[in-house]
Length: 275
Image (cartoon, rainbow, N blue to C red):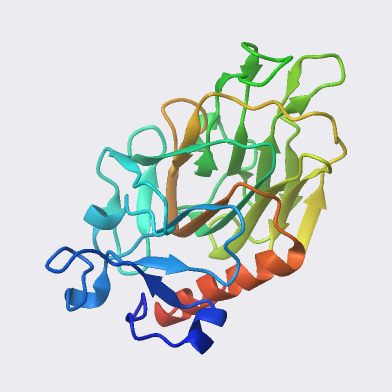
């Protein structure tokens, strides 16, 4: 079962399968609770981990942040629970993680659009995995200007677009979005946004084994909104199926991303999905 029980060995910890501090005796997730559904987890890479969320079978658990020190997310609306994932609906059903944007980020998602996404789709038909779009900048010298934040979404049938706001070269904000044509939006895949404050923004499809790298390495512009999963109060929205999300406040290396993704893939295999 997943998560693994507290008796997990040190060897398994190194393989990325440790459950930690599940809760007080008698509490959900305490030893002996059904399935340890509310347990926390440690990846083999913990550097900068702020949030890890898994979605399946019961929407009551969707807000649980499995990162050891993470606070739980706040649920808006009534997302649907399936055996392998949760279904969110843009501006209607989503999670507010309470996690603030940082200069560097890595967001790893396993999910898909709930239906085919038309090329050139309106913003109300673009499925969003994770976003804190829009807000006001909080870092000098940009304080108070509009900042579009970090986003991971589908604007077309096989397009994965990520964004991580930066200086446009003239002191104003730019979304610095990066477009990648890869796995069809309505197919399961491991998709990644990597934002490097000293480098570039990257859109990565680990399932297809491909990536696109942005051209801007100007200063990052951070906004005052927290990350939402499955949609947001404004911005793009559409039905989206999500099984797992990991949010890191650093730009992980390729090796670190692959290590974390391997753990997330093992869970998907148990659910009968190969990504």
